[in-house]
Length: 253
Image (cartoon, rainbow, N blue to C red; front, side, top):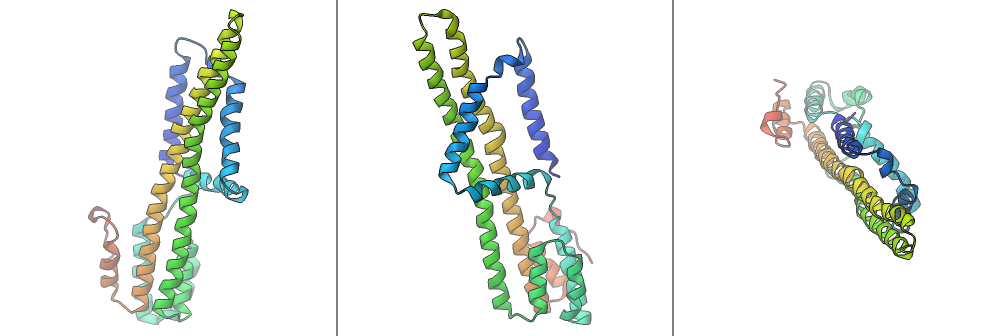
């Protein structure tokens, strides 16, 4: 579970709610028409912009931002070193039992291709292609949230214009000017909050996580090819350490 994401959402919304409650009531900031304009407008524009299947996939992507726990790169390097020792001692086929301990499907697929005797160039091409399309799926998920972050403030401005038109049409009845002005201002508030506390931060987190995962997958490809070529475990470890910063490097020897 990504506690940074949860902490950011709780602290961000918490401080905003506390500020809203100071000197007045929270219900001042609750307006159903404003919510309908911002949420309905944002998701309506999203449906026009993207296929329905890709929008449904965003739910899974958002869940991964909060719940999915990635294995550390150092653990992957240690697994690679152990694989190298086993393959040099017992042969590549001995890695068959090693696959059962691997949770990452990409990693497991690479090991299985290696065991099946696929040529290094072909193996690398297969994994690189899969990695390329994985990166594209991640990019699309982040792009959808960025698009929502751009649409929400625009829908807020639309609500503001609607509220101002209502207000101007009711100038002869001062009692109706206040509610119309509330719609105008609160709608913009909803758009800004949703954009800057949910949609854009989630898009940023997805981009960061995607970059980390792509780097880890590239490390896996390099390690698998190194094991396949019969590199010394120490040499393999040094190769893989080049993917991470010196502070993160831990030697198994």
